[in-house]
Length: 147
Image 1: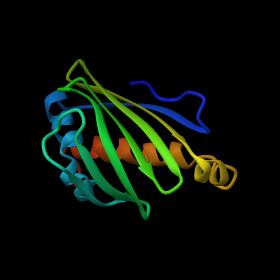
Image 2 (image 1 turned 60 degrees about the vertical axis):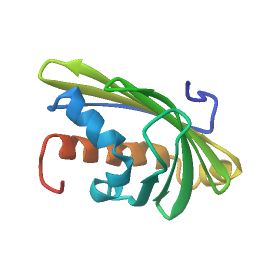
Image 3 (image 1 turned 180 degrees about the horizontal axis):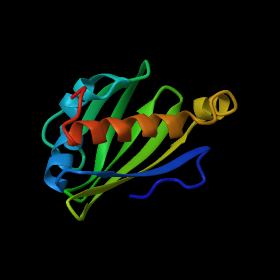
Image 4 (image 1 turned 30 degrees about the horizontal axis):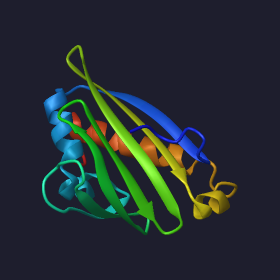
């Protein structure tokens, strides 16, 4: 799966986390625990095992999102699509061992009529959302405060 580079909102972020790929993978893919370390997520529930085709439901920023896992390559890559009121997203996470830690890269695209309407009002929405997610993942992975 790839993101839609022509979507109204597209972002790519990287962060180095001083933790093993195993640890970072475990944190990121434990969908049921997202609400415990992600400030913008109120609810998160994976239906079944972490496998391609599995659904998970979560609430972020007041929006109920239903997502489906599209790729699961343990400790290397996970990707999902998501639908919420008036929007569709494609989100990819990649994990690469680097020195004594993990380089995490994420890419996301968002489209739909709601995104087209909101983009002029919140042009940095996706950028800011991914910044918070990455910094929260780094904090949790490195065992710092708030985890």
